[in-house]
Image (cartoon, rainbow, N blue to C red; front, side, top):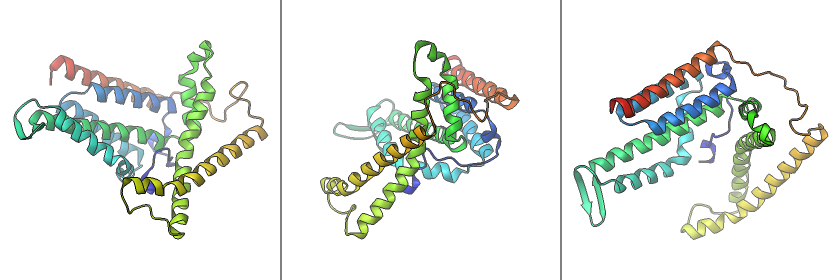
Length: 269
């Protein structure tokens, strides 16, 4: 299961999506999320799904990587679907037992909610899959640059977000190694009830926290040795510049958002 967590991983490549400016990809994710929450009906979700499938195809990351990343959130998807299934009781009642009721309205709500979460996670994963942590940091810092006038530490915030994303795969790999070592010493993480499983995690969490703090200290020392003092006076190896593909992508995203809003509120589909 740990190997299926792909959040924060970067897949190097030279596809159209990889070559886009990181600011474009961040803005497109924001536009896509807004469009997802504005979407209503099969037509809206169909357009958003077609857009997502096209983006995955152009990125050359592969659908398998996206689907593999869904495995750790499978419980959340099922739990959310069940909540919406029993919460909405409108429409024709299909099954009823006590206070539990399944209706056509609940089925529709649960289906669209699960699809919305899956598409939201896929779009977010695609951002980290096709953007290196350094470019992601530069893009976030550039987009938040106006907040510097309000004395907001934009560079530091962007750096912390990037480091957090960068260390997710590292901590997952470290967790897998510690778990394998503890199993070799006779630790059992699978059997027993929920309380027993929680107690069994203690031999795993303690060395994991120690390792995380050690890595953080080593990173801080390395940054100090390289005379890192924040964003003031810092130069960049690559300057961010918008190109034709970036403008086309943003225009398509805005058109998609406008169509989704029109369908939801204008045409009523």
